[in-house]
Amino acid sequence: MVATGSRLGNRSPHVGVMVGPRTGGLAPLAEGRWWASDNDGYNGKFDPERFLQHLARLQPYASRCLFVAAPDVVQDAGATLALFPRWRQVIEQHDFPTAYIAQDGQERLPLPDNANWLFLAGSDRWRGQHGAALIAQARDLGYWGIHVGRVNSARRVRACTALGVDSCDGTYLRFTGVHRGLADVERWVESSAQQGGLFTLEQAA
Picture 1: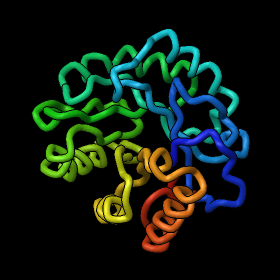
Picture 2: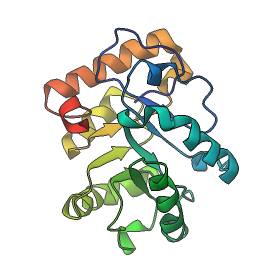
Picture 3: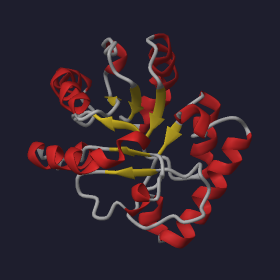
Picture 4: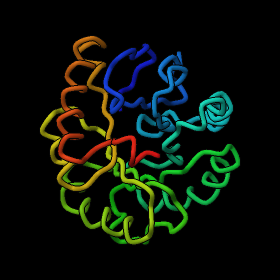
């Protein structure tokens, strides 16, 4: 998934969009793209009131939503797990599937059994050590999908495909610009889709 408010036009249907409370335009959602939403916790700017306003403005596009990520605390699994019950209820009241964000330390705690998606975040080293086991646990619990954040290269997309991940996102367009970045991301995900991985419409449906 890419973080952009620009129209994607005839780009591959395997390119989805990641939005958040600070996203400006929602043109790709109006085009009918599959999408998911983060919560701004990753940059320490989570604002409960702004998040609620964000959920309200997303409701016209609910039918194409993969998940909304429940608020989390960066690299603190215990605090994230404590937040989850309240915010899962809020997100579900807005008719969106809920993603639980796994942070450092989650390997010592149970995953919630009532999330729809696992969003694998945390530090790179921690994900490398514990990501595969957490993905397996989420599958056993019946989670609908697995998402990985901070994926900004073809190599990382291939790694996600090898783990059986369903979707991923990153900030690649921020560094390359929309035109070049979209071309690169489109190439990465098309290659993955041909291997039966990442973000197929059949999986999303």
